[in-house]
Length: 316
Image 1 (cartoon, helix red, strand yellow):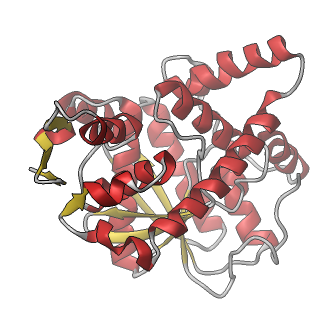
Image 2 (tube, rainbow, N blue to C red):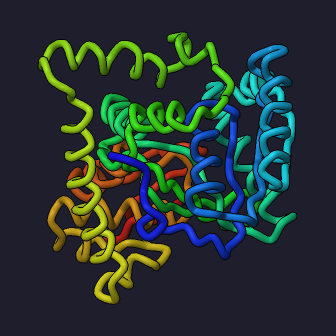
């Protein structure tokens, strides 16, 4: 599939946007497309230097700065020692880098009074995320959404991914056709990070086993799962389920639901309480309070508990 047309992109050239640009092939192609195909004029190019590539990190930042200037776009840049922060927080480099990028976008968003951030995620990224979620045991097949909202530093930001239906091969073709220069990240070929192992090892192995391009099949499965998930979400948000917004969940109401709605109701309830790290495993633990009468308390991430008492469950 080629790049979206201005009519289908969902991006208006009359609005201001923040655009995440690493200097790599995907984000540089995105910026070129916004500038020359969609004729966007009010763009703030955002680059976070993760300090993960020694001298190359600084060269990446200078490359993006010069590119922004050549396009007559504003430029925002910060530098973070992601490896050091990762060690301090005892979290992976990938998770730390993502969190730092979102915090960076929040700061730039506040400065420029713009809550719209365009990112260069594409169809291959989407498939990789689906497989990572699947084998991590999250129970999710939805992958990446073309539009999503996150809250960082108390600020709600809309993330837009207009190239999510575009495959990496199409981006490569676009870059070649337009003679676009970009920075090559040698770490993309390293299997140090999980996403790279999925990209460089797992997907090629699946292609070899099934003798076909499995990425299209994974993308179709994710699309079906996303539609079903959205339908269940609409049901949960209806007035019929207003009881989920309480501090307690009545067991009588939960027992009347089928397993899919029951699980989604619990997930919505836990997330509304802002509990960290909530997913499939945590939802099933809470469901065990409904099914197993001998269990009256379960532990959740962040030192939280969910208890059952007097025919209700509540967070302690």
